[in-house]
Length: 153
Image 1 (cartoon, one colour):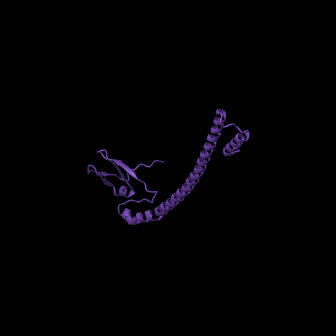
Image 2 (tube, helix red, strand yellow):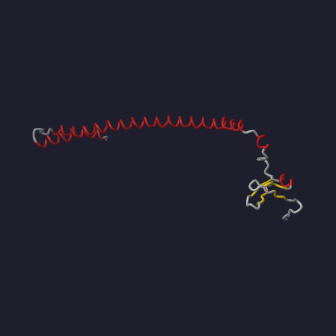
Image 3 (spheres, one colour):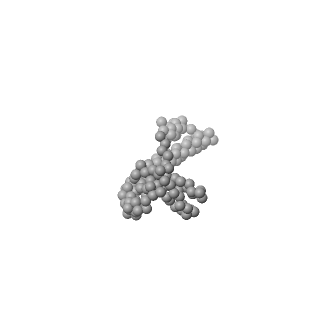
């Protein structure tokens, strides 16, 4: 039995008892039953409003999810297409090769030497074959020879 049905039952029961509403007890019971009916009506209205709000919130949530999916798909599409195209346009592979960078060769050995000034200089096999390198901090020329290289077995 719902709360509305219970309130209606109490009102019908009170009417069936044929209480004398002129006496204090009858007036009190009649006002209590009227109050219960009013509270029940308000509670029913609140429940209906809550259900309507909940339904609206569900629809808003679905709309937001659809918008989020659309935006995320668009961002991934933009990243996949535009960002990498921009990167390719801004940086040419020949530009890096001209500067002596070789990003694709994992077999390249990088050597390091410490200058007397404390600067650590990194260089590749090509520089090693040249036999010398100039310290970019103090300007001293560091020479090395392949004949003196020790091989660890």
